[in-house]
Length: 125
Image: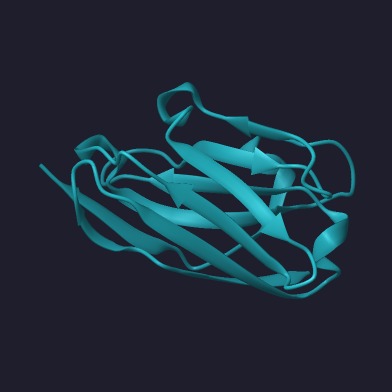
């Protein structure tokens, strides 16, 4: 099991930027695909972005393509999500997650077995 702690959330105006970080400990961080998910009030948790174990492959939900960038620093056991051109509809609690198994990049929620506590992102109009 890997322990995950997110940080970097906050309140920002529409058009602004935030950078989320996710510090990992426990299981070897570098061996597994990682992802970011978000959950808005009254809605289900949804996939945002994922990255392969070495960082060579990434995938994004259409609504954030061109605005968000996922990256990882395996030497620092840290996952990042750079969010630019933020919109009010990006408001949610953002969670980082580690895949259950070593392997290809995945975007399926049930493939992720370790979750952080979440960090709130609020975008005002």
